[in-house]
Image (cartoon, rainbow, N blue to C red):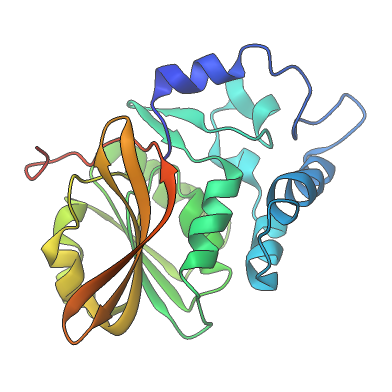
Length: 236
């Protein structure tokens, strides 16, 4: 869930019909194909499974109706409760950085509207997703069930603590930024597993690819990012 709500609204001003919004004669499916071509493939996303997932998942179903015209724009969008749905490219990049296989069990921290979970579920075996904002989590559960995702399991709770009863996980993805990598998530990652997570303070964050080796987290910076902060009892 990248960038704050005020920043999202600012991004919408002046966007017009660029990027990926459907024209009066174009439906969402065509806009989605154009989004993938111009925002995903053109920026270097090469994993065919990620591209296919981005082509299949209807992003407009995960966005409030008043913003549906912007569903396939190159920007994050507000989803309520001071949270956002991430820019499509960021969703694709984080998914690609996870190096998913069809057998993987994935933990997601920060369900939001459920869009990232749906993209993951198109590739992985099972997705366990945790959302601290109850109305968002419950709405995502209903939405995902309605779209037929029976391999996504939603929990309302503090994502900092992960989902211990279903650990260990092959992959972990975090869609909000803690100031440091939560140790419970490292503990719940399988040996050799990968976690993709933004880390840092507001205005200065990096996306990290973390690999667990000999019980320790080996980190690699990917790109600078700006995500909403991790909230809950452990937030500083």
